[in-house]
Image (tube, rainbow, N blue to C red; front, side):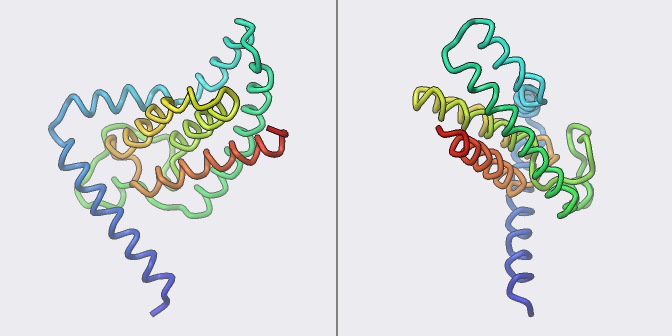
Length: 180
């Protein structure tokens, strides 16, 4: 048997296990579903440009640099994200787990990687790299976004893990290329 297939099957098995554990914990927990829905909405995309515009208007130092790096990073991240999503074509949990229905309707049919998670980690990583370690608390928000996508049933844990890696990695590379 091909060792790569064996590894992928083991990862997929772990993913299914973890997903089903989260689903069982949150199944009848209205609080977790409502909280997950709200946290997930904060990463729908519009805020990623509203925040830097507000910082520019407020005259915050480094806001122009942040805006430039953010737009560049988001363009690159979205290109990689779309290529990966359409290349891997991993089905969402509701299409794989028998009898399971997600709590929201996803925007497309593929789950790998998580775009919400990727954008959130990109945004937070850029924020930390520009304004320093005082902004590290924002990783709680981006981690909450990742968890919310699993709780809502539209992603497996590794979808969000790879989304976090994509967003963080893109932010770091853009900052290095930009001389930060």
